[in-house]
Picture 1 (tube, one colour):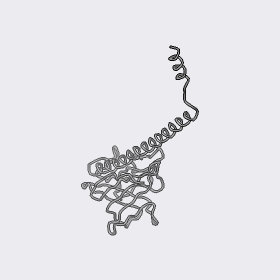
Picture 2 (cartoon, rainbow, N blue to C red; picture 1 turned 60 degrees about the horizontal axis):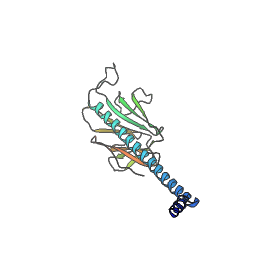
Picture 3 (cartoon, helix red, strand yellow; picture 1 turned 90 degrees about the vertical axis):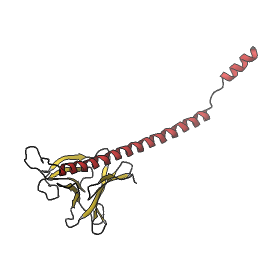
Picture 4 (tube, rainbow, N blue to C red; picture 1 turned 180 degrees about the vertical axis):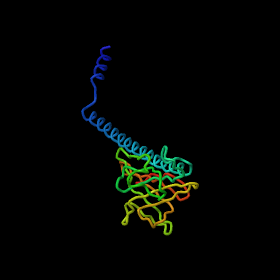
Length: 205
């Protein structure tokens, strides 16, 4: 009985050394940091994907408005106007859905044609917007050597096909895209073709 009591007391007095506790603490710290970093990246990726689909839905909304009989503003008596989405290089956190009342393929500078203005928040932004020139297949972008300062994708009855205009009035585009950037530098593209197809591209860096 005394031998058993002695062994039990010896076992109960044993514990972790300071070195062992330090190692365990360091391992827990590293694992926690990795999990937090992965969580931040996951959150950024999810929000960026959501933003890309929101932009794509705005294009679709312009297409639906443009191909249907919708009054450009309540009580205006104006029907059958084209509708478009405007991107400008002056503000990387805002884009506009507008009713092209005068059918010139451009957004009115005074904002009189604007429907909702969409504001991009939480550090996300429009990295660039580009049009693919129909005759050559080359791109003209907002961040190129000879940049375009604005781009409009619009739709007009009765066709669901997309039409394009930009600050370079003489250029004709076969497609256009908007590249969105997340807080971690990753990007997604929303592309519209002249046949009216709208799709969100894969994640890139």
